[in-house]
Length: 182
Image (cartoon, rainbow, N blue to C red; front, side, top):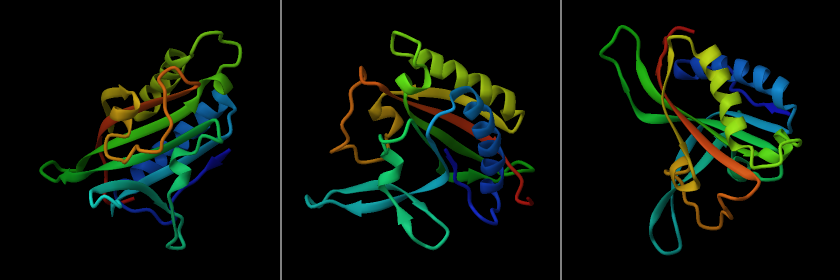
């Protein structure tokens, strides 16, 4: 189990880190899973062999090294990460931005006694937790499932996926009000 956080965070990353710490603490108690819980990751533009551009999710580990494969890691029970929108609204007294929280979970490891695909059990645990910790700063806008919706920004070729597999993907989209002074 790994809670991976940024060092010396500022701005939106402070809000994410606080949310991430509480999320990990509460869901880890429920799930007890092998979990890679990443902070905000980056969308880096790449060009494929066919000449088309695509985004790849990457996490900077603090030593200016980027990790890419870990975000779609199916060798652990849970992978989660935060993704910030490309713009922030500064018209209010506090900045506001769109933040997505993305989970990829092996539901058979999270709920071994459940005989059906436990995607709704997973949703309920996540929703109960984010509702409890989100307060008035993290406003849930919507929830998306399915590989095309959850990983909409990223290249999915080579990613083996089936909606009836043991893994379940879910994306929660929030409107987040945050302070620039952490």
